[in-house]
Every structure is written in structure tokens, then in C-alpha cells.
Length: 158
Image 1: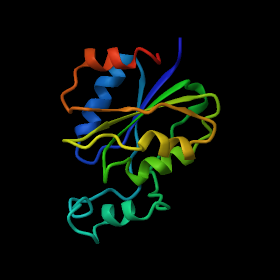
Image 2 (image 1 turned 90 degrees about the horizontal axis):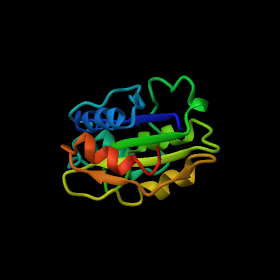
Image 3 (image 1 turned 60 degrees about the horizontal axis):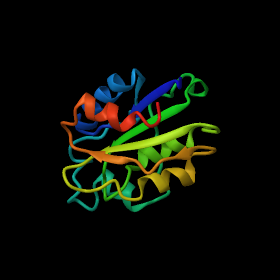
Image 4 (image 1 turned 180 degrees about the vertical axis):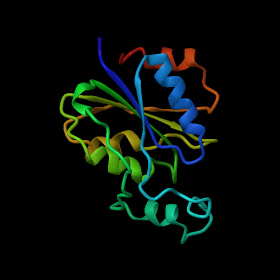
């Protein structure tokens, strides 16, 4: 049986709640990807081209610092990586996370939350930067996805 980690970045709490249900569904450990410099409401204003999130998403090389690290990434076989969809892809902090570890021999499965946007090219983006990982395409979920729905989806990998 695989050892499973559910990691997530959540700007408003929606992805956090979904990640907690996924961890329950998978009997997995849970880790929050927290920015070293927390986002303010103004930072998240996607309508402001000068907001922090807009600037980060327009610069593909941007790598916001993460406040803490997974203590023993080497012990996990499957890593679910969750995030809200920003500008039709994963937020830049997910790219930071993907670059910080050696994922050789590990499987990464992205999952996302969004009111209407799909997960876009997030899986292929993560695959380009997560050293050694096999990366699945991933899936976007509605905020209220049930533990049962999440368990059914995740059962292919756990």
C-alpha cells in the first residue's frame, strides 16, 4: 500500500476544505503550502493588473517563497497537490513547491478548485518542473465534492 500525502495551497479556504476531505478519503497525511509572505485581499485582486497575484501569474519564472517544508518527502509514494485555479493554471507557489523536492519515483496527482475554469495545463506544467515525478493530468472539483466522490476518484492511485 502506498504512503499518501495531500498537499495544498488555499487562498480563501475553499481548497483547504477540499484537501481535508481528500486526506480523509485517502487516509493520507495533510500539508498546507503556505506562502512565507501571506496574501492579502488586495494581493488576490485579479482585476488589478498590479496586484501581487497578477504580477506573479504574468511572470512564469516567479517563485513565491514557502513558509515551511514537508519533513520527510522521501517517505511518500503518492502526492496529491491541490490549488485554486488562477489564470487558467496552477498558482506560482505550486511551481515553487514542485521545484523544491526530488520527486524521483513518486506520483503527483494535481487537484484544483474553481468556480468555472478547468485545471488547464497544470499537470503538464508541474511535470516540467517536478524532478523525477510521474505527473497525472489532474482534475478540478466543485468546492462541495464529497469524501465518497474524492475516494472514488483517488482510488486509482492509492
